[in-house]
Length: 312
Image 1 (cartoon, rainbow, N blue to C red):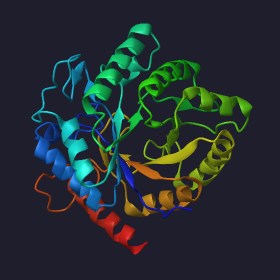
Image 2 (tube, helix red, strand yellow):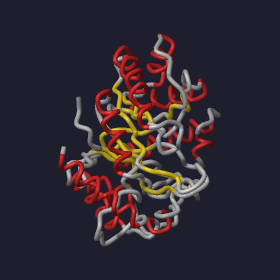
Image 3 (cartoon, helix red, strand yellow):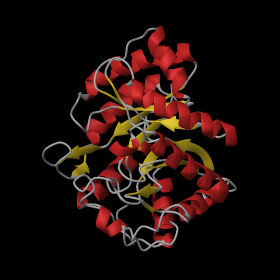
Image 4 (cartoon, one colour):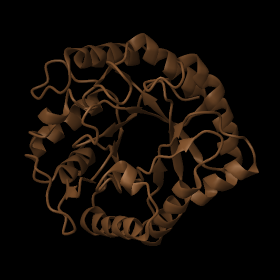
């Protein structure tokens, strides 16, 4: 059993939702490359050794040095490069995203032009950033809602993209599905897992979005561990450290209480190989940071969690 602590986090240069990221998205847009390096260092001080980039492009504009898309209107010159450089200095691992170049739900479709566009992004990222020692894996943000099985349209897309990645790269592939029900522990689900082509699945625990309660995750991850052990595919968790301040998906994200997060950690840790969270960025912010991000509650959660993790 791993320790019940968070060792990985997602990170977004520009949040895709106009509601969710309201307390950090505008300030983050003003960050320079050096500011992003500072925030990565603060994550490292919290115990984070793995960062998953949510999106390298959004709304048809890039957060990296791209010939495919124009640059997004942010202060940083190349925040992806800055994160990879600093992660290398800190011996952290980075999973680089593919997709979300227009919108998450557009990229989710399986039209040929969407897949072709994503393959161009993959090729460009491999050419420009492969040499960074911190570039340890790929993240495919094609989220599928798993009730009993994966949606076939998601599998069709991921199957093609993961196959292309494996032609040009030996880096592992990560996806992070969300679970609305209880996946079926049978051969069909195991076959779906293998068709996806991903090496690691970090299921969203769905606490922050109010689909389940912390006490429900024990049964969920026990079942998933049995499935993944049989399929031979690595199981992580994506632990939600947030609440919505109002209506789900239509209001801002705010930090959850540390006591709730501790319940999630202890219930999920026995069944997974690594605990990621969504996310340190904007929701767990170092007190006294030169570049604060998020509300005062984000600073409180950073301090509360740091005390907890040091006690483990």
